[in-house]
Image (tube, rainbow over all chains, first blue to last red; front, side):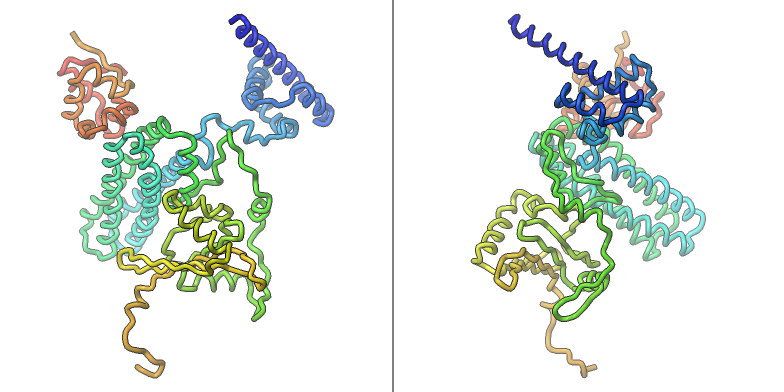
Length: 419
Length: 75
């Protein structure tokens, strides 16, 4: 027992000693010594310093030594050079939900945009509409409502990614109730659009619907942030949040998007250097020489987006490299999926199907596979092709998705000459 | 003898101690509290203060309603 107590004392002593040294080094830097001068001594003396220790040290610098906050902040760049980590890592909030890319952070980020849209734009245009229902203001309202329809993605992520986990923990009632309200908001937005575009509603009717939308959306934001999200944070494990964050890109984001992928502190993933490069490079302006012609990058991009099919390409390492983004994409994709492996972009239930298919492609057992599904009025034909080079080496997989309902409905014939 | 309720305490706690609080709240317009599972889950995060803000209620009339039932709301 006394052993344990002793150990603790030694630990505490060690920590204070380290903090004292850190403080001295920082003060020396402050006094004008160069980073190089103190760097070696720092590494030798301290070794692996934790973020918590740096924070504690900064705090004591401010409190005990009276160094103003602004000075400590100025020192940050020096800290960075020494501590190897980024400032962001040092000052990273210890609460995961406050870190960019965490699903809760993203939900809140979207809520700020939603609030701006309903409380400023929609509110303002609604008031103007009440006074005058001329074309211009109707157009503005329709524009707001079209933007607000994006809320569907926010709701869908909540319902399809977050609720299942809450239900796993036995929380059914609130999720069902909230889903019902979400649906109500969705249909109100659509209803308002119809009233406005068909010009069937009276000024009072439309204003009433708009007011209801504004009220319900605000209440929903409040409920999410004061009840749902705190409750979810209380229940879900970090692993579950990581899964939600990974799958979020498939559904998409509302009016904004997380600035980056969330990497929990405990499990840093190796940064793909190639991807980093890609991000920093602007869209190239040049030309691409093919065997059968030359296209500018812009022409190529336009061609890809005008094909009446959705294309997604994953490379030989299963990393999503490209998707076309035509007007009517059947399955939503967001830029967040680029650079991620395809396994991370599929829900756990269907990932084994994807893996089996890729295995067959890589082993050369298959070159193509087709699926077809009926979704409402669309008949969706999904084709996968193994992409191979001249020597037959596997270079990746191309997903080719098309709504073939209009094609299947064709009958008889139509010739160029027939009127 | 008036009982005191804190405006910032989770509703679940308030109701656990004083079951009649639930009925007063439903009467005031917090119908969601009656739905199954709500009190045990959302109720742990929801407080009277938040509820009043959410429903844009007048805090004084809420206080009055509780006072009629013998509760004193403490801010």
